Structure formats: structure tokens, C-alpha cells
Length: 427
Image (cartoon, rainbow, N blue to C red; front, side, top):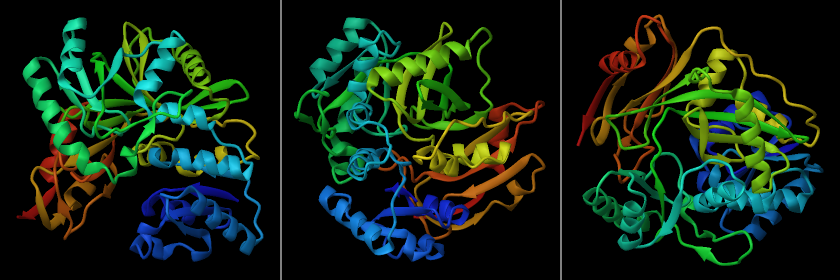
């Protein structure tokens, strides 16, 4: 039995459908009664409060005792649950990425510091809590900078600043928005360094880093018995009409620049993971390629999220979610390869253009296109749409998995899909 720690009802429903007998789910009390959980066997759900580690242990102990189960692994799909998952794995004596290493990845500055100390290319960065430190860093390097939360995810509150006016506006937004997220588990206080008990508040301290230009990619890899195997590589296309860092599409397989060495990438990923203190795990990495070198922006011991699992499954037939369940088991022996599709695919995000309540939604004209393989609605009639900087996840209406037509570029595909999307909104 593998226990999945702290994921969302959509993932729970999908995993349970495919693995109904050998996976249990540690679920936040906040999801009690969620409609998507109605299809899940109640005997596979362990409800608990994620704000109390002792409560988590008691909930799991009671469940295992009542069902006479011995767990053989812990899986986790969400950054905010990784520390709890690692602590629980240590308590149960089952494999999971090491706790001190997990803590480093939850603090973006500590991640960069560890990589720099190991001689692995990443961006220069500082932690700042006021404008003076930020402008000094900006002028000291004579470069564009990126301002972002220390422990957030995706493009949430990420700002590319090219001058002091943009820095001032970014700081103003961060000061207004971060305190509103204090109850969000992603923005809980985090450890300030591996060898100290001091913590830093991500709602009052920010990461400031150099901006590095180049094509961006994302990959999953497995570290097992001292070896790294990349199991999924995708390109990331930015959404130029959205906030900085927003993803218009993921492309699969990744089209790396000519001359780029995947073998060298594997070596760098292995060095990066071991320098952080990991000995095993399934990892997601974001990186930018400049001068044929992969500069690591993000590394975390969980599989890639967003629309990536849907994209890989449509293109290859492999379910990344249950793939991760297998990797998380103590019975896991060696990574298996995910096939590379013979033709390129993309998952394209369709963003809401306005705030409001959805009163009408129709994607039938999109579904009818010959190159569209799947349309997954993220919103339905009656849902409220809010936009950045108040909410970054809520703006995606759907993502579409398409087979890329060589006669039409990705941006043209995106505009055609948006033209065919029918959405009515009310204030």
C-alpha cells in the first residue's frame, strides 16, 4: 500500500480509478464532501489536518491499525505537502527523499546557494525584504532581475524588472498580495538554511535573482541507485499576453537546440540532486538553456504538474501519476522508459480574458478539430474567474492537447483555439 500525501480531489479520483486496491490518500479535512471524492472508496481516504504533524501521525496510525495494513511507500504530488510527506515516511520507515534536502528545495534561495556551492550553473540571487537591497542588486550586476516569492510555485507573483520603476511596482504588488496568502500552505514560514533552526517568512521576504534569457524547458527524472534517467522532457512556451512566467504551452517531446547534450544534462541533474542531499526520488526540474548549458531554476522531488501528465498520457499512453506511485514503492527496482512520440504534441492553456462569473461555456468547436486529442475543462458554468495578481491559477478555462501541425506554428494554434472557445461572463 502506497499512501499519497496531500493532493487534490481531481488527482485522487484519477489515481483511485486506476489503482483502487493498493493506494490510500491522506487528505485535508478541507476536502470533506468534495463532489470529486464521491467516486472514491471511503476506505481509501484518510482525512486529517495538515497543520498538525502529530495529528497526521495519529490519523495514519489509526488507519493502518484498523485496516491491518503495512505501508510500503509514500508518494507526493504537491510542493506544500513534501515536508509532511518526508516526515511521515521517516516515521513509518518507508523510502522517500531526504527531509533536509526537501527543505532546501522549498526555499528557492537555499536551492540556488547549494547549487552554486557545488559549481552547478544557476542564477545569482539574494533574499530581500526592502527596496534598497533590491536596487543594489539590480545596479550591482547591471542586469535585468526577477522578483518572486521564496517558496511559491509557477508564475504566481513573479516579476521581470528592467528598470527601477518596474522594481517599485513589483515591490508594491508583493507587499499588497503576499500577506493575503499567509494561510496558504505554500507560503508558510520556511527554514533559513540547512544547519539552523531559524525560519524566514515568505510573506515578508522575497527572492531576487538575475534574469537569464533563453529557451526554457521542464523535465522529470528518476535518481535510483546512483544513476539518473530522464523520463520526460518538454519545452515551455511563454504566454506573452499574460503575466511574466505564465506558460502558453508545453511541447512534447522537447526540441532542444542543436548541439545541446542530453548526456551532459543527466550528469548535471545527478550532481545537482546529490549536492542537495538526495539519494533517490522522482524529480521535476525547470531550466533555461544558454550557450548550450542548462541553468537550473527549479528542482523539486515530485513529478511535473499542470497539464504535463495529460500531455504525456495522450502522446504515449503512459500515466505519469501511477508511474510516480510505482517509483514511490519500496518494491521499486529500476526506472522504465517512457516512449518518445513519433510526432510532436502540445498542451495549450486557454486563459480567461476577463473577471466575472461564467454563464456559458462551449468547447465543442475546439473538440471537433482534427488535431485536437483532448480538451480538459478547468472551469464550468457558475465558476467565478479572478485574475492576477489576486489569483494566478483561477484564470485557466481549459487546456487542450493537440497534435502539432507542421504547417501551423504554436502561436497560430493558440489563437485558433481561442477564437473557437465560447465563454459568456457576467460581472
